[in-house]
Length: 331
Image (cartoon, rainbow, N blue to C red):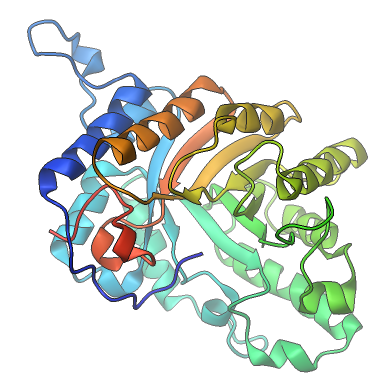
């Protein structure tokens, strides 16, 4: 989710509200330093990444290469976060715009900076129905399958042993309708529903060290039909030995569902990690801060919740900037 080029928000909220959001997340992690006279030295983790790291987790952000010339943007990334996801730079149109012609210039800008700072990198995304090059449309089923596997091998091979986890397949399930219905796409139309399993098997072979994730939106409510479809797929994959290590909850919302933690737990109980992959929360003031706190607390409360990635650093460049959904405003 999310694209570059969204106009900056013109109604930015005061910085104090943003400090409240960060404080809410930090307090939920449970490691916000108490006053200096009473805080033990090892509890003084005043940034999101440092606080999360104390429990073996990460707190990351999506980053766009086009903003890396903004010194404040980069400084905030370096100070606050210990993980990164490239917003668009690792997607198919960016990495293989022409068949067998791989290009990683912008993706490497982000990845190499993260590696130099000791940050984890999430790869996003290998197989998706959107942001794919037009040359895929003319391929036969046999050729499309070969192209999918070749793309997985090419991109994962470039970063082999360096990427923490990959969104192998992104947003394959349909919104609404019967449980387990996949969206109609080039992948289902030509390869059938089995393309997800094929992609995961190819990804495991391409980089056995990387965690392999299925990532989607509107799977935050434990009882939603879309959530049940993803749950059933993961359960089936685990039963049959199809390689899957994690589920990504995009979590673009105004408020987390009441059963958000239970949802994280039900996936964890299947034997996979849960990553909150694209978090942004609309609204403002104490309601927004409390929503961030509750999401963070839910992750902390489930041991297999590996970490949180917010979908951007500043409201200025957010894909939903009018909602001022991020932890830092345009200033």
